[in-house]
Length: 344
Picture 1 (cartoon, rainbow, N blue to C red):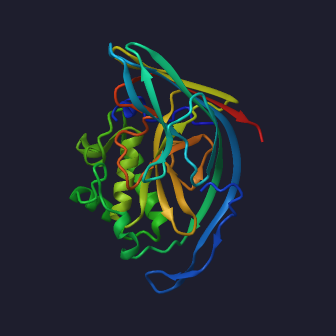
Picture 2 (picture 1 turned 30 degrees about the horizontal axis):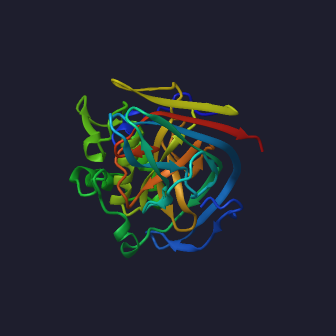
Picture 3 (picture 1 turned 45 degrees about the vertical axis):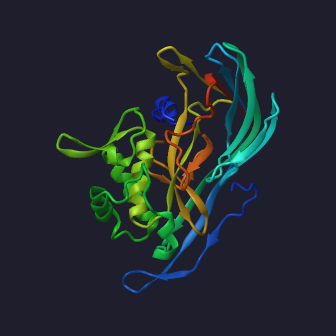
């Protein structure tokens, strides 16, 4: 069951802006030399894989806030087909104008809607989402050479890879790590030991470090945790990105969560689960999930069935996590998600 203490990115993170089922367990063994010249066996192996299927209904209420008729494009994000997740779109209540994919693989249905002044309408989608709970053992992975990671480990708005404070931290954490997985484990432990968790607007890694009682602390929510992790990993030459999606806070056959716009902001259900977490790229296994806010420990390649992936931020810029449904002139007044778990 999900950790009741898991605090995921709340509504503030929203406002601001391959599973191949039957994928064979990976077991790769070859030798690399450690710093002393001794041969070490590389091990990458799935020791647990179990599929969970949900029927997902996502519904959005759109409103024309003006007094005039508005014709607008509306963008609805869908869960993605990706590592350890398979998605089938079953039906929508409206025919989309077209379907598009972002640079990082997010799937978006684009609708052309016309609403009179003050008019409202719903757009709905029903999907079958199969996620994989997995546990992966990774030992003695080789470090990639510079040419392999040069174009994939640079900075961007939220990842301050040239910040000298972060460079110094990364060097102290990971320069003597045995392999990239050990370095990532050290990064996660460093973050958790200094985490001052509080829901906030996404500020990125550069603004997540604060002085608290004379010591460095990581301040923010799931997005800051992910951004700090990705920044430190990339400084060390480890390809890393942020995954965005929903975390199911309840272990039930039916989970319903919602959020609605009010005059002063947003109200949301107690179980609202907007979430972000890091991933690292392992050539022998693909993108591997890293969870730091589930169970209070660093979980690398130890992924629960409660995560639903909606998108990734590696090349493209997503701002403050998933929007789920967005338009230029029309406003989304209500977000409603129902997950119905199909028992194996």
